[in-house]
Amino acid sequence: MERDELRERIRRLTFASPALARAFSRGDFRSVFRGRGLEFDSLRDYCLDDDARLVDWNATARSGRPFVRTYREDRSLALMLVIDASRSMDQGTGELSKLDAAVLASSLVAYAAQLRDMSVGCLVFAREVLRVLAPRRGKAHALAVADSAAECGRSPREPRRPGSSGARSGAPASHPAPAAPGDCAPGLATALAAATSTLKRRSLVLALSDFRDSGWARPLGELRSRHDVVAVRITDRSDLEMPARGSFGVADPETGESAWLPLGSRTFRERWRQGGLERRASCLEACASAGVPTLEIDTADDPVKRLLDFFERRRKA
Image (cartoon, rainbow, N blue to C red; front, side, top):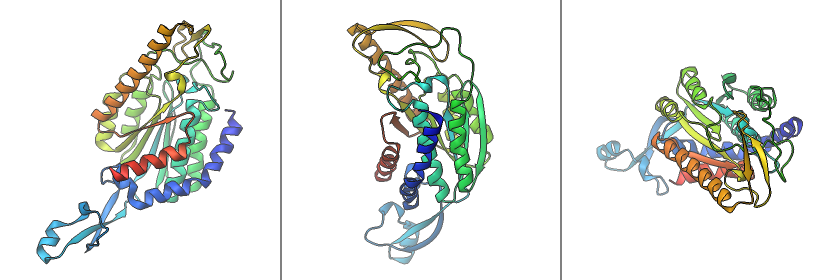
C-alpha cells in the first residue's frame, strides 16, 4: 500500500479507536494483563453481578457481610509498541503487506490508549533499532507514533543484495516474493532487549512482528519478567499456501538467498504448508512458555475486530 494511502487509512482509525478505548475502560486491561494496570481504590458491599474473584475475604470475615475490592486505572502505566519493519514484513498477497497490517494495528491501539490518557511510545526495528519514541501523553504524540512506524517501513533500510527482488505470480508488484523458510528479521531479539533496557517503569508492551527469527524467546521472557507483554503475530496467506501452478525464482528479502519454487509440485506445496505450521507452533509454544498471550492478525483481517475480539476473549477467560 502506498504511503499516502496508508496514512489516510491510519487517520480513519481515529473513528474506531473509541470502541477499543471503551474496552480498556471496562477493565479489559485487567483481564488481559492478569490483574496489573489497576490500583486498589476501596471496599464496597457485594452486589449480585459482581465478579466473585473481587471478594475481599478478610473484610468479609471481619464484618460478617460480603465486601468486594474496587480499583482505579493506573494512569502512570505506559504503552510501548515494538514494531517489526524488517524486509520479511513486506510480504503480502492482497491489498496490505504484513508491515501495513502491523502499522494499522499499532496505530489503533495508540489512539485508543491516548483516549485513556495513557503514555504511548514505540520502538521500530529491522536488522537494528531504527527509531525510538519515548512514551508520552497526548493525541499529537499518538499520531507521531503511528507516523513513525509508517515512515520507517517505507524509508531505506538495510540494502538488498544483488538479485534480491523476485517476481511473484499473480501478486501486486509492490510486494516482494514470500520469504523462504528460515530465519528472517534478525533484529527481533535485539529489539526486545532494547525495550527491556529502555523502559525504566513497568509498562504494557505489544510486540508486532511475524516472528520469523531465532533467538528471541529468551529476550521475550526477560521483557515479560519486568513488563506486561502481548505478542501480536502478523501473518499472511502465503505463509501456508502457494499457487498450485507455475514455477519461478525468488530471493529471501532478508538475506538475498535465491531459490526456485516449483509451485506445480504438490509435494513442494505440502512441504511449504508444513513448514509454515511448524513455525507457527514453535512461536506459540515459545510465547506460552514465557507467559505471553498471543494475538494473530492476518493481512486480510480487520484489525479493529481482531483486537476487540482478543480483549473480549481475555476478559471472559
